[in-house]
Amino acid sequence: HLNSSCGPRGAMAETWEEELRRKLHQGEAMEAMKVLMMQMRSFSEKPCVLQLGIDTKSFYTDPAGFGLAMKEAGASVDDIQRFSTILLHRGRIFLALQQPGRAQRDLRAAQDMGFGGAEPA
Image (tube, rainbow, N blue to C red):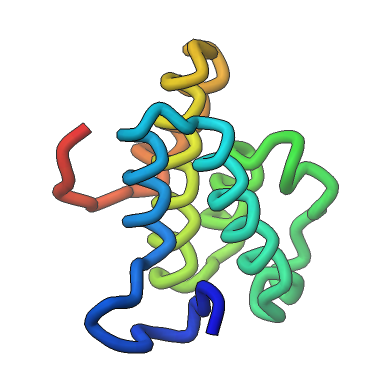
């Protein structure tokens, strides 16, 4: 059972966010980005995302813009929360990769989407 996003498989299972944080902490920003890209791919395949009628061409090239468009289109609170979490982590990875311009756009979009996470930066 490799990294399933359908819920916890047991006490020993590491969530994608835990894996991402661990890789960042170990200085493996590119590996963390790979974990994040798998989450983005999984999210993009959700039928509810396609049903919003948003142009999905910008999903990978401008995820911050896509996320804000998704919120404006009336996406569910759960989907908004999940995507803002993805953007938050993406921004942190770009900071670790010393790309503050890209990081700030994602971090700002996560904030504008209403990210309510209480985890430390």
